[in-house]
Image 1 (cartoon, rainbow, N blue to C red):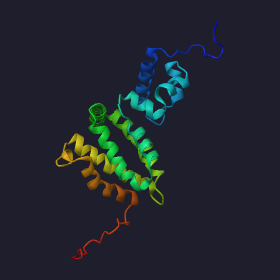
Image 2 (image 1 turned 90 degrees about the horizontal axis):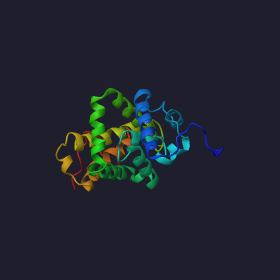
Image 3 (image 1 turned 30 degrees about the vertical axis):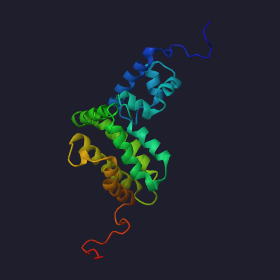
Image 4 (image 1 turned 180 degrees about the horizontal axis):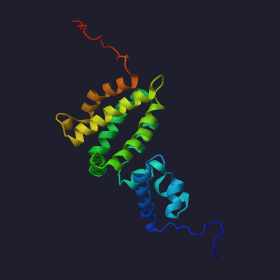
Length: 215
């Protein structure tokens, strides 16, 4: 006897179901963009229950990362970093997480492949851009108090992307040879200033053109 609580015409959670969901999600993301795709629309086209997508992937961010075959989804990593501490240590924690996932031999190569593909492939590049804007820039913008929060969040993201590009894409020295602690030391002040915004110098900074005091 059929279970009256189970919708007819839906695939059960078989081994091939996950692959079918990813096929639909990958195509929909590329065709419609990140914002337009919903978990419900993917479930409907794949012929599965919405709860099954949540079971496999957890969220839209998780589905996006899996559809692009990413071992580590930057948006999900950011969400964890946000939950782990306050804004005062946010720049340092972001750098450590970025280096950890990009240096990792399992999670790093798929991210680098996606970055290279996004540069050469306009549809994929547009999709990655939209996902970064909505899941990273907008998320950081909610953490930043005061005016021009989104602009400051975008500036923060620009510094992070610059670090990724120089260390992993261009392999620029000495960035590529720096330890995580060195990167935290040299890059975190830029991230902190980006969060503050223009016209708000870091503590102990002197006005331009004014010589430093001699000890």
